[in-house]
Image (cartoon, rainbow, N blue to C red; front, side, top):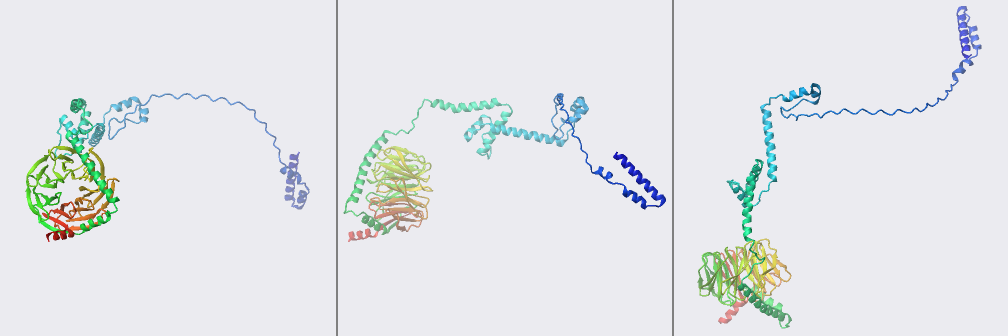
Length: 575
């Protein structure tokens, strides 16, 4: 009905409009329009249509997915190796094979390509590099001996020259390694194994012979050495008992003033002055030694000649000739008028004061350095550049002990005043203390940084002095087993050290700085410097009572240094 009413209104409006136009009457038309109701036209535009709810769709079960068909299995495609620099084995790509088929691929494989000269050279270089790499790997896996003698022996067994001109050890070993790798690569393993078998047989042959010989883990000594050790033990027990008794008496007796006695001895040492100087030989002097009573002085020189001098006049008494090489040291016996000399001719000789040789001690394999008598006077010790020091029987001339222990040449040797110990020093910057009663090395004194040239025991029984090329003198305490003092003694190497032999109240050192110095044994401070030589001082000795010191030098002179108080006493005796 609403639609019909709208159509009627629309028709009436159209008719009125048409009448207004024809009859020129506009106003009545407007009035007619205004009278008509407008509400029926607007009301339908504002009404909202209600959409009825949609009924839910019924749940329909989904059909199960169909299984996929399996992929077809294709045979593996055999691809030829990739082409490198014009390699004729190159083949077409997989797409080409799929397009042209297997027949065309076979035709391509059978086809031969032409290789350029440059590609051929590149291939040859690559193959050569691969071969060298494989050869190096094979050589690195081989076991090659490191001993040069074994390398030479294996080269000889392989029929190769054992050495080439200018070839060193490592180059020779590399040559053997390359040769063995080459033989292994060529398949000549039988030849190589035969060489190995020959080498093993050569090494095993002496072992089979020595299986029956059982060597002891120690060096067996002779019966004479056993008797000598017993004699040394008996002698040292008596001497040490006397030394301890004297030390206790000085400490416990109120009448004994030890400090005053030391002060008097140091005062005597501080007053040492040059008393006499005499030319001792045509060649530089190398050693000197006082007799036990201080009435004679013995010197030796690089000419191989030793001489005896009277003291204090320093007049020649006798000449000792017999060595064929330079003499390196000389020592008087502490009990008599026998003296011994050491030489670079590998021998030591025993002499009397008349100049006749008593016996010769032979056995060292290199030149001798220092020499020393045992306090008992029955045994003689020699140090040598053959890295050993030896103990000899003075009466028979037999070698009692050959003592090793130094890694380099042994230069200095000294015996304890009790006779129980011996100290050796050498070019290995080491000093060792040995027990003569058991043969053991009881102490190794490490501290010097350069060769040790001089060693001396103190009469107090527990101090030991060493001097060396590091220009220093070290004082060791045998009780504490360590170094007590380090004396920066000289500006050049220390050639010799000696304690005052009676009580050890002062120490004297000689050096290549052309001086000798006296040091207090109380605090090891300098007491006196003995200057006068014009060349390096090689050796020194102190007389028994400490009143006189003798020095010898490369300036060929013997110098005696005496205290002023001693000179006054001599003057009073003359008066």
